[in-house]
Image 1 (cartoon, helix red, strand yellow):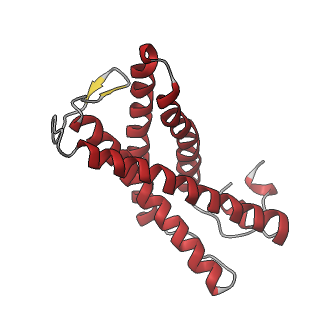
Image 2 (cartoon, rainbow, N blue to C red; image 1 turned 120 degrees about the horizontal axis):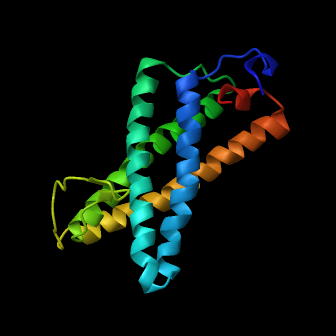
Image 3 (spheres, rainbow, N blue to C red; image 1 turned 45 degrees about the vertical axis):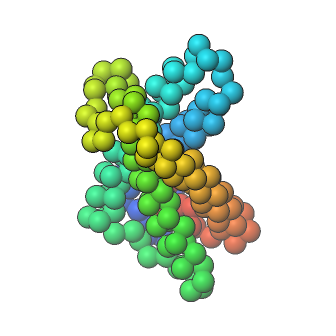
Length: 177
């Protein structure tokens, strides 16, 4: 779909739109992969961890870039009733927050459990804490709770998309396409 065929509405910047969809794809790959780790055979478990951790670390860097773009290029104004605007801002803000908390806590949990990150098997990532078995369960719990919070926020986000696109039939979805 070209820009010319989209409704004439204020849209997110091209960089914001691209980064949004990159993060969405990465989350839809990383989240189920992390969930599956508990169900795979032990001989492939480390492979699942390796891919999950590498993708999660990538999400962190894309999210930091996304925050930078968002600070540089403000989001287009949100229309609608005040309660909807507050809900939209809240869900977006919490998504940004937890999409940073989750990979950071996962990275720190992995390090604290004594497994330094080798990003995609190519780049060794310095561990800010090293093996720390006393705090590893805390980081793991933060990571796990963040996963479920992100799932709930993504569900709310998608329900809002469905509401606006199929029920209200407004152009909200086109802001990010």
